[in-house]
Amino acid sequence: MQLNTNKIHYGKIDEVLFSFKDLEKLIKFKPSTTTKNFKATFFDNPSEELSFNWPIPVWSSDKDSWPIKEIKKFINSSACHYKDCSRVNKKINLFCKKLEEIYNKPVDCHIYFSLNKKLESFKYHNDDYMTFIIVQEGTLKVTVDNNTKILKEKEFVFIPKNINHKVESLSEKRLSLSFVLYEGDGKFEERDWITI
Image 1 (cartoon, rainbow, N blue to C red):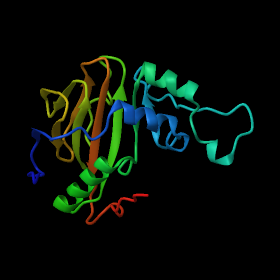
Image 2: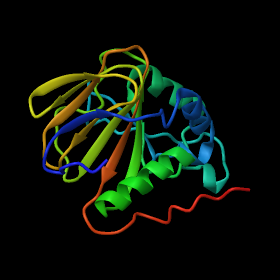
Image 3: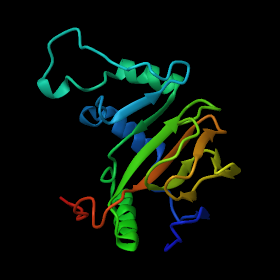
C-alpha cells in the first residue's frame, strides 16, 4: 500500500482489524483505561478537564484508572478514544509493522468510538503527522481539506500532515482506527508478537 504521502487517498483494506467485542475487552482491562490512555471529547465545554479521585484507598497501580461507572458516563455522552494501541492485538500490530516497513516511520494506533450519531471526534484541525483513518464498524462522514466523503466498514482515508480534517459519525455505533505515522526514521518499537 505505497501511497504518495503528499496527497489525500481513499481506499479499502481486506479485513476488519478491531471490533466492538475487542473494545469491550480493552475497556474492562483496568490498566489500559487510565487517565493517560483513555480520553472523552466534550464539545459543550472543550476546556473541561476530566478527573476522578477514588473515595477509598486503592492499589497504587489503580490510582490512574477510570472506574467502570465513570467510563459508562463518557461512552454514553461523548466520542472517546484510546491512545497508544499499536500492540492491542496481533492484526493491529502487523498493520503498524507494514506501515513502518513501507514508510520507514514510527507508527502508533489510536482507537476512536462513539455510541451516538453525529458526534465528532475532534473539531476541524490538522496534525503535524500523516494519518490513516480506517472504519471498523459504522459509517463516518470525513471532511478533508473541505471535501467530504462517506466511509463505511474497512474503507480508509490517508491524510498527509498539516491538512485540515474532521470526522463525524453517521451511525449509532462507530468504531475506527487512526494509524499515526510520526516524523523520524525507523520503528516505533519491536513488532515481534509473543505467543504463549
